Every structure is written in C-alpha cells, then in structure tokens.
Length: 564
View 1 (cartoon, rainbow, N blue to C red):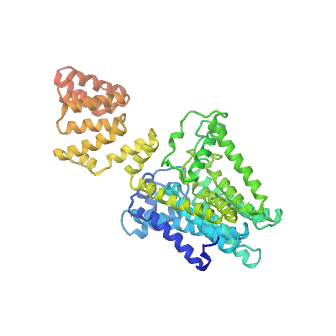
View 2 (cartoon, helix red, strand yellow):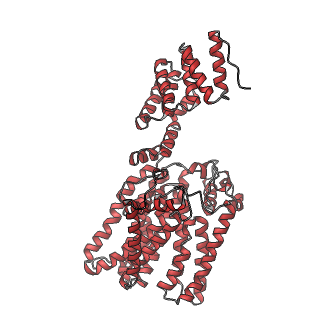
C-alpha cells in the first residue's frame, strides 16, 4: 500500500473524512419536505406531539402511525417525539427530521469503519496501515452508496438507520470482548445495544446468529462456550418477538402475498438477482417495487427463479469455501452478514412486499466488507490497481447518489421519477395524481368560487401535463372537465366528462358529474340517462337523487320514487 500514508494521521481524521463526505452528499436533503408515509408516521401522528406519550409508544400499535398498520418500530417513534420537541413549533419541521437521518447515517458509516478496522486486523491479519485504509474505503463506500438514498432521504427510514447503528455498536462491543473483567462490560453493552436495535426494527434480529459466528468463528471460542454466550442474544430476540406479537396481535404482516407460502418463497427467488444489481449501485432505482405484487406467479423452473436460486447457493458455498482460507475470511464474514441480514425481508415470515431498496441498508455492510477482503488480497498482488479500483467505486457512487437524491425532494418529483423508471405501478399512479392535486394552483381550484383566466390556464396546463403521463386516469380527466365547466367552456367540459365516465363506468360520481353538465347545457335526455346510471350504481347517492328531481321538474315529468 505504498504511496498511501494514512497511518500518519490520527484515527479522528478518518472519522472526520467519513462525516464530511456524508454531509457533502446528503446535506441538501435538509431542504426537502415530508413525502409519502411521512404524513401518517410524522405529520398526522399525534402520539409524537408529547414526550408524555413515550410509554404508549412502546405498548400500542396505534401510537406508531396515524394509520393503524402492522408495524412496531417504537424506538423510531420515540425519536420522532424528541425531534418534534426540538423543532419547537406546532407542526413537525422537516429539516430537523432530515438532519437526524444524515446524522444517523454518518454515525453508521463511522461505526462501520471502526468494525471493519478491527476485522481487517484480527480476521484478515492485515498490517495496521492496510487495515485502516481498507476500513476507510469500506466506510466511504457505505456513506456514498446510491441504493441507500431511500434510507437517508426518507424520514420514514429512521428505523433502518437506528437499527443499523445499534447493530454495529453491539458488533463492535463483541469484537472488543476479551472474556475478562472488562469483557463483562462489553458483553452487557452488546446485549443492550441489540435490544435497542431490535426495538428499532426487526431487521436487526439476525445479530443473534451473527453473535455465534463472532464467538466461534472470529474469537475462536469452543462451540459449547460460543453457544452458551449466544443464548442471551437469542433470549433478547425471543423477548422482542413476543413483545412485538403482543402489541401487534400477529407475527406476520399479512397473508403470503403470492397466495400460498410456497409460491411466495418461489417468487422471492428473482429478487436475489435484483438485489445483486442494486448492491453494485447499478440503476435503475425505484421508490416502490409494488409492481411485483400481483404479477403472474413464477414457475419454479423459470429462468428468473433458477437464476436466483443459483445465486443464493453459489454465494453460500463461496462463503463456506472462503472461510476455510484465512486470508479470505473477511470476505466470508461479509457474505455471511449479507445473507443473514437479508433473512428478515425474505418473506420467511410473510410481509407486504417482495423487495425494497431500504431492505439493503444492513446487508449492504456485509457486501462492502466482502469487497474489503477482496481489496486486501488484491493489494498484495497489484497494490496500485487495487487502490484505483477501490477508490473508483465511492467516486462513481457519489455521482449517482447526488442524482438519485433529488428524487426525494417532494412527493410529485418522487412519484414522477418512479413512473419513468417503472411505468404502470398503480400505487405510484395513485400517489402521483394525489400529489398533483396537492399543488398550490390546484388548491386554488377548490377554494375559489370563480377563476381568473390566468388561474384557469395554469390549472388546465398542470392537468394536461399530468394527463400526458397518465392518459387513462379518470380522476385527472374529471378534473379537466370540471375546470372547463367552472370557467364556462361547456363543450370541452362535456367531452372530458364523457371520457371520464367511459374510463371508469362503475363509479357513480363520474355519471353524476356528466349528468350535471348535460343538465347545464340543456341536454335533458342525456342528463336523465346519466343520472339514472349514477343511481343504479349507488341508489343512496343523495346528490344524484336531487339532480334527478330537478331534471324531471324542468321537463315536467314525474319524479321517480326514491328507495324505501
């Protein structure tokens, strides 16, 4: 590692460098707003408005979110309450929540540096300068990796950040454990950090298994002693699982999303291929992989399933093979970390989705540790080439992260980016249209009784742009028709609302809107037919009933009787 004089600098220099890179890449997010689930978890969540609610946060699922959902992340919710109090205003302040995410991500990268440094020296047997440089490259890669942008930029993902920090803190304590008097303190601290990690997010639970790997594989303790030392970690995991089940009333988030448990596990296999691409930071990225849910089931002998199975088995075998070779044990440890921390998101316990980029936050550390082992071995043969390749990855990832980060600026930007990356995701379409209606100019439409020509054109332009992306969305089409009606452009209003009724013929409100413009334009027969259709779909639709009465009154025909 000639030419790299990192040993001349004190350790704090490396920590400062990691913090500086984290701030430079992600600092702009403090200007971002709340997006997507942040509304239910933060903005509308009354439980975070007072620190007096802290006991309830650990005992009630309703305290986790304004919308009751099968999730239990009390450490995150408790920290939200602290951030709300620090904001000092009636409404949660987005900047302080984003600043917290940056802080926790930087702390995770620094702890990863510390853990990787110890592993490089004790496991890989690297000299101090090489160990420190390798650990620094691993931490910088983690700080800059673009697939982690979802976690850093999305306030919701504070649970991933906190779980990772506590897992790393526990791992660091275990690596420092020496079995002596001070060792008891490190061991107790590791258990405490593990408990905090589990109550941050269930993705931390595999640390109970990693503890055995550390005791038996790294610290070289006898298997019986390693098992005995692992038992308290398993008890902590069991305590958390029991507490979580008690609060949620269930262990799984939902029924198997492919209909059966076996088919769900089969459909998980192609996810391994997608995760392998994302681990390398290769676009495209997507905020929502919901398009996988409801897709046709994969036959077991399909290429995607067999490819995923092969990838998993290959890396499992590779990890075992590398473990038997001392110079490569760091890479083997990294692959074991990667595999174990993917278990909670593998649908072994059914959850509501197949994959998400945030699920890679903890496993990513193992992948980078494996690359660190590869770098150490490569540097013994070609030091300059290895250093160039290892430094190039954080540099490339930094550029990709800066681009990907912008997607999380606001709801509309996020959903539009997701639409361009993976068109046709219904949940993204719904959220994107909702964010269009939340724009200031659209708020004017709802509050103003009349619109100026300038306001009307601005609203129509916004709706037309959105409709170019979602031409079949009946809500956008309806809004175009109602806006034209509001400014007296009746022929256009009729045309748009006729199209909206064709796009969603089973929604009574579409026929009611159409009947209203027919009535205003003197097309009585059409108005009567459209109103009748609205009432056939929803006999209790009172506004349609009143419109029907008005139409019959004007035409002199008797009003049909209402429902008895």
